[in-house]
Amino acid sequence: MAPSSQRLSGIFTPNIVPLDAHGDINEAELRRYVDWLIDKGVHGLYPNGSTGEFLRFTVEERRRIIEIIADQTRGRVPILAGAAEANVKETLKACEAYHELGCRAVAIVSPFYFKLSPSAVYAYFKEIGDNSPIDVTLYNIPMFASPIDVPTVQRLAEECPRIVAIKDSSGDLPHMMRMITAVRPLRPDFSFMTGWDAALMPMLLIGCDGGTNATSGVVPEITRRLFDLTLLGRMEQARDLQYRLLTLFDAMIQNCEFPEGFRAALALRGFKPGSGRQPQSASQKLEVDILRNQLQCMLSAEGFVDEPVGGCPAGKSNPEPDDVAKIVQGVVEELRRRGLAK
Image (cartoon, rainbow, N blue to C red; front, side, top):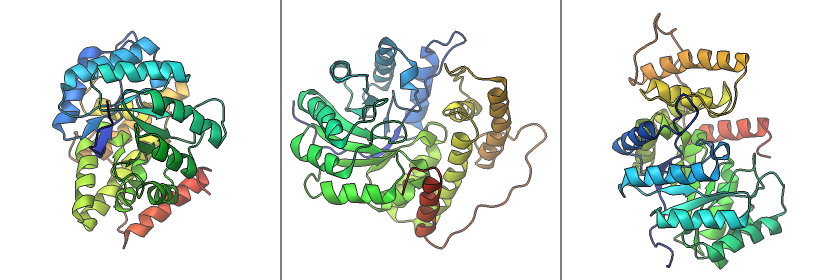
């Protein structure tokens, strides 16, 4: 089967997987969550991603997660299924399984644990791209896996029609611009998706097609509206939303172990996500408890939940920048501080 001619675009939600009291997949709650996300307007779903803690599930459980979501979605939105396994053979098995389930495409993280050279990363994806029955999205997340550099993306785009997109979670704006410059003239159908919520607006402005944004699993109303406003050119409104989203994103990702902040926020939206499978120390649990109260105040300010008992302290208003460049500058400085950008 030939690759689809329709480019991936929009907001794809990397969903949390609700767990029950025994730590097993809470199927009923996952189905309810899927319906809610679709009703709130996300363009697609991205199960088995980092936010979905794919490494903390067995191969069989990862298959089951996609089965549940594909069945519940019933074609209402496309599914970009995380298909990364520990080796090429198992990854291709996942590609075959998700193709049979009707997924639009798969996302495959660059080889992790072993830090590989660009030529090794190319060879890995070339093997997959030449043998996958389903469209493939490259997943660049250099903080956790071997980086995918621009020449590698360009070469794979030229040689593998089945490789149709890249999801980049580095937050590196110049890197994204270099990829778009190198690939889009050769492959107009190739899609560029950002996984870094803090820079969604500037990424869209430089030519990205959408994002796989964890915040869309908690506040899909804001993430979807930010996407729409940016594409409509309503810059002042979009800029305001980007700053509000940034504040929420920072709180969830910086104040406790990822993705526990997103689990805590999702619970405040009326779901039962349960506890993650990674054991938590007493101090970590306390961090989540403190964060939960902070998140409730933030979500109440957006009108999504009630204020906590005792109310919320009066906070400072978000800054009003003169232009988008200030957003970009802040993101790049934060990435440099973390050692994720030069």
